[in-house]
Length: 285
Image (cartoon, rainbow, N blue to C red):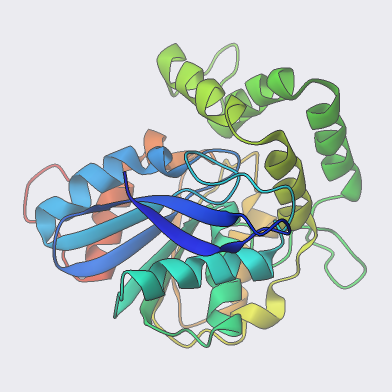
């Protein structure tokens, strides 16, 4: 099993990040969403290396097989963890791809570390520029929504995750875009995450303002968002990020939910291949 050391916790214990590194070629680093782990990228990890790309995906601290420290789930620390991944593997000319919460790591890394080693960035169903509704951010989400989320995690995390998983893929009485098996997988992965990390990361992505971070991004940028996203509404996120980054390529997936990495997996893989410079020549992808 492969791990990267990303500093120490307050007690001096090493914080290790689990990662998988597949394929050869230009590196693409995939950063997972909350409260999943790197296995959410299964389809993209299977497809991109077939077309001359090296894919690295890691588990955020507190999730998957990575260390589960008590503290430090703020975006500065998470961006430093990302730096540890890039530095330890000595990756150059990286395409950074952040999904949902992971988009925050991309934005903060680019400002905090000057975009070192990165040539392109992609925001997929991502939380930037600023999810919380404030006086100067009227398109954001009401604080009451996040308060209810945090209360749900505290009251019964497993029940919360069950309902969240359905919303994640827009599952309802009349709509079943994913199988029950996918929902079961999601429930298992999210349940195994650290409860402290689950709570603290929700606070981080709900309250962190990335508008100044986005202003530092000068590299080619891809924004992908579903217009039926019920988890990170497009009006509060993707559409606003596109305004902050007018040079970006902005792709709206009609009818797609938050979890478009699965519901629209082939299209997302094709768009990532094209953006990273290795478009597929196979029909149907």
